[in-house]
Length: 359
Image 1 (tube, rainbow, N blue to C red):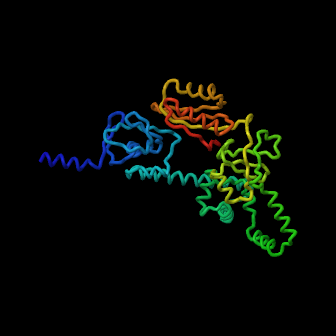
Image 2 (cartoon, helix red, strand yellow):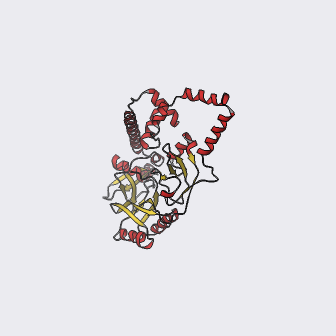
Image 3 (cartoon, helix red, strand yellow):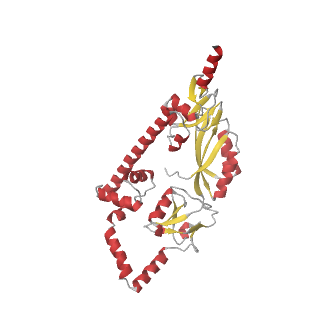
């Protein structure tokens, strides 16, 4: 009977693990459960705000798989929120349901905010939202439904700067005009059209040069806030209706959207050498807090590498810190050297460049 009972217990618990909270409370989870499963088992809000975990006093990602006997402490952040990828590494139904509900709520809120932004923009033009306007916008921005349109507006991947032109555009007239050019247009008209196209598009063989002294350049340019490229980054130019050139990274979501819808406004650009003008960049870090950490960071940035630091923002919770540093650099090489140097500082667990810091 004793042997049977022991075997029964082993079979019962072979598919489960037992882990502990910092206060010693025992938590039962399925075998293979992650730190995020543990977080949601404690409380839904802890799971929703989780950014990491200290497992046996060591910093780990929330995707880390737990083992029986582990002591687990969840690290949270007020700015954290559930992501779709989380569903790939949670096992418990409680965690999956909580993540799905949070994602659904976020999507609903995003759609509502996008609708409000569109209504405000249309109100500025003296227009009222209707089916025809929404249809034109969906067609222009190549989105399958209005929910994605509103979501894109709220996320900023859909820019409403050209909304007036899009709304007033008449597809039927454009088609007729196109066929008139093709069938009835004279050779002179076609030649002028071809010359106009050549003028409007800068050849990749002679790209627009992003000079250091912008005031004396032939044409001004500005850095896109959505991806914040700096010299050394691969870039493209977007010629705005106002005439300025906006510099994007090719993989920037907004740039991809522009290339799809306004490809004729994309021009080739390249960086000139920048020795005087610096560009704003941001890095984010996480790690284990200790006395003197901030002092070590500022010494490396300001004293050793001679980089101008404009802002440092670090928050600490339960011995784990996360923060950002804004600084001015001349080239990606400067930034990469800085990241490499800081990554070797004791206590730094991760460091990376932040591309979108437009807020």
